[in-house]
Image (cartoon, rainbow, N blue to C red):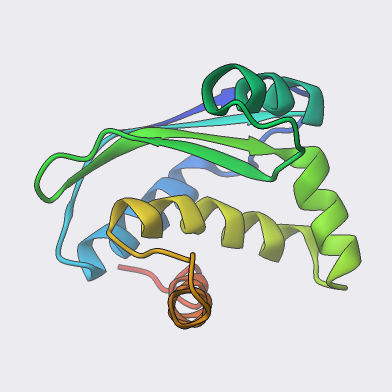
Length: 139
């Protein structure tokens, strides 16, 4: 089950459509959907999470806590809407596209993809594009 929580003024327009997309992405990686929570927040909220749990004093667009067991994808994904907007502006991309990229980035990590090395990062970017292209595909 996929849940959405809002700690800022932002709201997804069609939660069910996003849930269907995320489920299709997970299935495309031969995994199953467990308990996934998206928490949309602002920079201050996510900075506090970053400081408290990861001992980092930096702004970030996403922090995910992975509870995946075997092939059942589960976790909490915190997303700063402030960072997503700034990234969209910096990369000259629509906010909605950047939001989808960040949302699916956390899921791809849960599926086993990393982004520490340049090769891993290139694969992650390719996977993000592949999965974003699935957004408008009906099941």
